[in-house]
Image 1 (cartoon, rainbow, N blue to C red):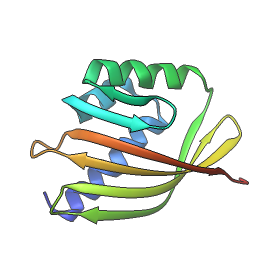
Image 2 (cartoon, helix red, strand yellow; image 1 turned 180 degrees about the vertical axis):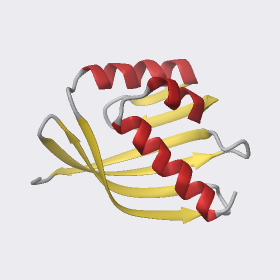
Image 3 (tube, rainbow, N blue to C red; image 1 turned 90 degrees about the vertical axis):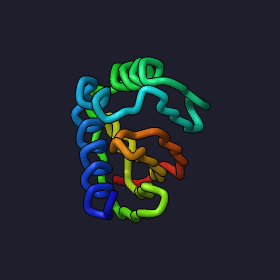
Image 4 (spheres, one colour; image 1 turned 45 degrees about the horizontal axis):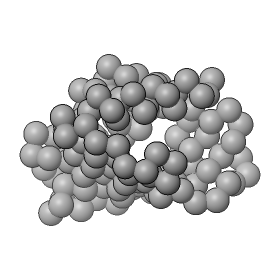
Length: 119
């Protein structure tokens, strides 16, 4: 994949997450996707990841993602994104490392949470 494709797919992922669109998220994940973050630890497989996404979406009435920066590694088909995650008035700094396979599906998301920030 090239930089433009990785950038597009990463932004599409955030838009699907922002709009809480489980159907489109499912189409973006590989069957063997792995998600790691401090709140859920490690989740393996598309159905388990979608269940976790659904549970997260059920906790909030609104979600927004304010992208600060996006770095692309074409050798590893990976993006590194810094953003503010806003949910029901709370704002947190987050860094996501998202890896894609050759079929342009997400195979891994590693999330690192920073501090709460002022909106």
